[in-house]
Amino acid sequence: MIELENVAYSYGGGELLSDISLRLAPGSFHFLTGPSGAGKTTLLKLCYGALLPTAGHVRLFGADVRSLDRDDIAIVRRRVGVVHQDVQFLDHLSLVDNISLPLTVSGRHADTVSNDLNELMTWVGLTNRADALPPELSGGERQRAAVARAVIMSPDVILADEPTGNIDWEMSQRLLRLLIELNKMGKTVLIATHDLSLIRAAKAHVQARVLRITNRRIQLAGADL
Amino acid sequence: MKLDPGSLRAFIKGDTHADRVVPPTGFTAQLTLFAAAAMAFLAVFALALSLAAGRLADRWGDELARSATIRIVAPLDQRAAQTAAALAILETTQGVASARALTDAEQQALLAPWFGSELVLDALPVPRLIEVIEDADGIDAAGLRLRLSAEVPGAILDDHSRWRAPLVEAASRLRLLGWVSIVLIGAAVAAMITLAANAALAANAQVIAVLRLVGATDDYIAQAFIRRFTLRALGGAAVGTVLGMIAMILMPSASAAAGFLTGLGFQGFGWLAPLFIPVLAGGVAFLATRMAARHTLRELT
Image 1 (cartoon, helix red, strand yellow):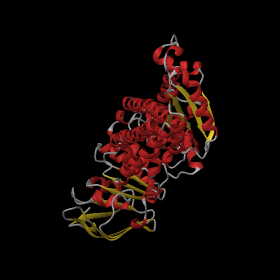
Image 2: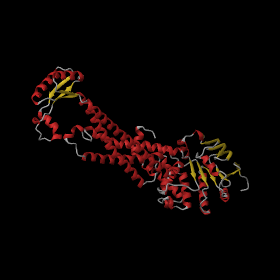
Image 3: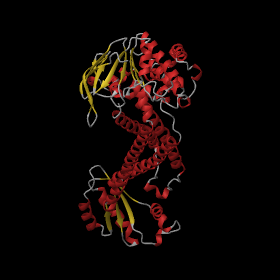
């Protein structure tokens, strides 16, 4: 699905990530952890083509990311659902329009899949908020809406960057259950988080591998969790 | 976006879903409409000026080039005889298609704008005018002058070139200025739309980032902006053009006396010309927004 091979990434000044090799196999569940500023978000961005590696190769669905033009990247993103910590919506559109936005921009109008959409809204528990505008939503509602938007295209991979950063424990448990359910449906899931209790909570339900970024490199975290 | 007929049809038909992804803008949209309308209004006059100046230059350059005038300045008692002698010479002159002496009534009509219609020509030593129409070869003005000076001492040949050339030049320059104005107006529309589009793109940076994240292609994002600005320019320019044309219709028509100046307005098929202004404005807006959108989008991930 997504493969990184000896990838390095440096911002103007120094190298942030170096010699990263990682392979996200179909159906796998990964956590990515590490201190703030270690490069978790950068690694995720490399995985959906928002950043190009300064060295090494990133392959998205078998194609080297450097060989993709902007339209190819757009097509790749229809197969990768992304959930951000501070998720952005189109504030002038209703929640249901926002969740179906990936369908709209890929030329599939939401009317044709209204059943699926209703099911999805029920699944994330936002049916009664369908007509609300994004600024009216609570933090937890926004995160669940972000998950719904990320999965509406039935993507192969879901990348979540600190999805529980802004919400309370109970809500983050709910969100985690959604992501675990998606993984059980066969989706590849990668969650970047510094919340170790979230990782522990997940391990009870799913076979998750934990990757840790330390000293610019990635390691498989051991039994300390 | 490719410019084939299919995508053009899709562009005009529009995608209501795609249009909605960019938030509506009230006030700035009206400014764009207003500026497009004002520019189109000005363009109508620049176009009218160009077309009228063109007609003028053609008339002075073409009709007058093939005519000449002979003035018979002689005492009243010899005037008729000298006129007859001059006409006789003209009949045998190479390059003369026809020649005729103006009647008293015609001369009076010519002088009426300056002296009033009550003027009695008989009392004045007004020179007799002979209108000479040249054929395609034209006359040898120097040769004719020599022959006339030998046989008709009171005859003065005027082939109009002395006063015609600067007038034709002025009219041509006026036409050029008209066209330059139209080009400048078009460029100003392009600049205005580019500024407005850039402002809209900048104001909607978050919208664009969200759209990119969920897999929208650049064309899809750009089209929402392009369509919006093209339709605004088209609509605004249409209103401005209609107002400009109404103003042209309401303009008092030039009187018959000033007829040789030709009316500053549209004639015949010329009335169709301003109808292209909105189309051109739309085209300019389309290209300007497309360039601005592509430029902005390339810099995003």
